[in-house]
Image (cartoon, rainbow, N blue to C red; front, side):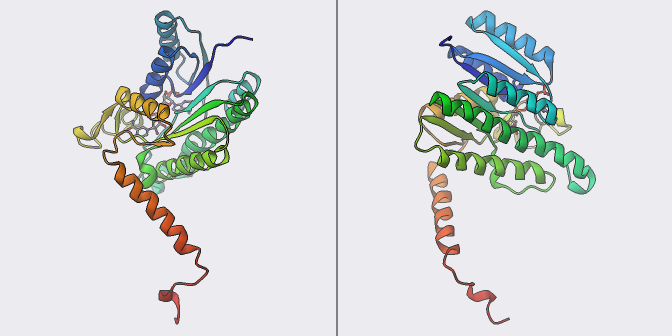
Length: 262
Ligand SMILES: NC(=O)c1ccc[n+]([C@@H]2O[C@H](COP(=O)([O-])OP(=O)(O)OC[C@H]3O[C@@H](n4cnc5c(N)ncnc54)[C@H](OP(=O)(O)O)[C@@H]3O)[C@@H](O)[C@H]2O)c1
């Protein structure tokens, strides 16, 4: 058996995923690149093979389509990998009243169902190998309800809680699991979905390179949740402290005074 390690990156045809592909190729990983746009993956794969002497395979398909997704899950089961970066994701939809249920469901299929099923398929291989790395790309919007982004915000809150729960399940193993929460990143993410390129002030954006390099640094440092643009770690500590205080309070077994006496 070859001792080469393979990393799977979903959504590798542009933006953050394409940078993960470049950086992991530079680390010597062979790659399985996943997306719908075959031409983009062919160009990227050829470039990385030539530059880094690695082997690149391509998986072309729609992760929001159950049959395509099942095909990739089978692939992960049959040919276990060392690392999975669940990066493919879609966002900008608009108000639920105008976009409708089908569009919201398609987003949830990609951002939630595909990420969940692929995580579970990869973790089965990691358990057998006793090691492996799972990186799930969430978003800072996991903390922010968003008019016009209801399913997007909800999907990223799912990714964060799902990933953190997996970390608890695998706490006593050598399997690394990281949630990455980007803020605004300059990619095709906004324009490809018909949104303005200036949703946020120019100064709010990081490049995809800055984001991925910081995320990989966080992974090496053993971080479980990496938020590259969060300047003050004290803010995260305060969120965690409030979360613990919240659970201490809600598990008191009492109805709050303000709801008593009609
Ligand atoms: N950019 C930001 O500001 C930002 C902020 C927070 C979080 N994020 C998250 O970062 C991740 C990557 O986004 P990005 O900024 O790099 O955007 P991007 O450049 O638009 O990349 C999205 C990637 O997902 C793939 N993809 C989309 N729908 C797919 C489908 N149905 N099946 C398979 N692949 C699909 C796209 O490939 P094909 O079109 O070729 O299929 C593309 O490679 C997403 O999860 C996003 O939610 C981005």
